[in-house]
Image (tube, rainbow, N blue to C red; front, top):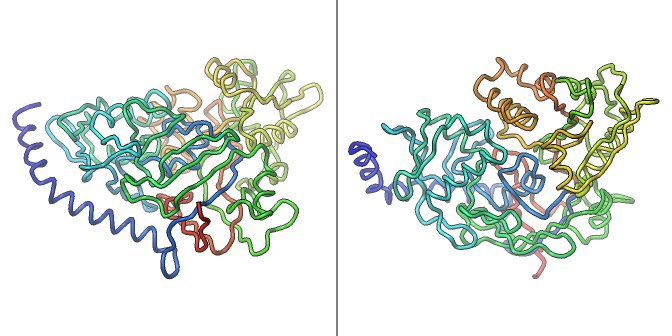
Length: 464
């Protein structure tokens, strides 16, 4: 570090207390507003909320593009250095202030006193390790433009890139969430409103109030999320009164009395992949053409409504093929079955084949498959964030290229438009939607998307 840059860091750290007081006051006010603006009257704290999700919950990894648990519940456990609101404005979360340029690059000063749910203090080494891990697992194209990231001083990280706005927006992605240096997805540790407590034998993920939460602990004492074996399990449990939230409906046999529907918005994408075993049908654009030719009515039972038109297509024309899908993801399994039925033609049959997560990952890595259904999380809510994620999911090198030289115009960055140059095609938007009782408040998550589970209030909380 040069003498000039050292003096800048020293000058900045000597006024950390004043800056932290201002930032802390703003954060506290924002947290209080976020957690009370949707409530009526006195906020009721405490209690337990339960739901069943037709998605795998055995681990929660914020740095994986295909992690369904992180897609829906990552905000319960993790924070990033920055956050984007619905308008695209950046605010500090785990960072003290917005990034600033120094002679060495762009530096980020961390908030003092932040701890992970385990009690471990947040350090600059954790930030550097988190960014490196994210690059390795899913965010290579999104984060490589930052250049080298290193520890400059205690609580200070320097990024080689010299555009503070770009640095802040890149590090605001949920896929750039900050975790401890030695992170384990099976026992996730973060700075969010909830802390991981246990994975129960029946596949339930138990989260409890995080007393060290960077933006304030959850209002609820506990959030219990069970892994539903099929799409009916959540509706059945909600209808009987066992669960507080239902997935994809208001009840299995009939709507639960008084229940109201909700849709927390677009969270990610279900995609169709073409692999090497598809032969000439693995060419870029084929997957998107096949996806666009599926009649939306064949997917309606899965809550898919985003597709309005059907492109004329003859379906699958390759050799009889298996459509791979992860067996531990009931929603994707049902989608794969519907897609297989829609694509099949005489002598060109497609059959859904659920496989273990390990077998699916191996096939995807080697491209040793004909067709597969998968999940992709966007890097952020902008068109570029979605398209870089789709390109990275196809090939990390394509993700790098897309991030550095994006197509011009939002139309060129449409999720389905970009699929015409990739070996992945968008099948459907993935939403968190269903039903809940009217006395349960479901505030929107960061940027107005998803659910802020940490801010949920329950007027009649259950006793633990």
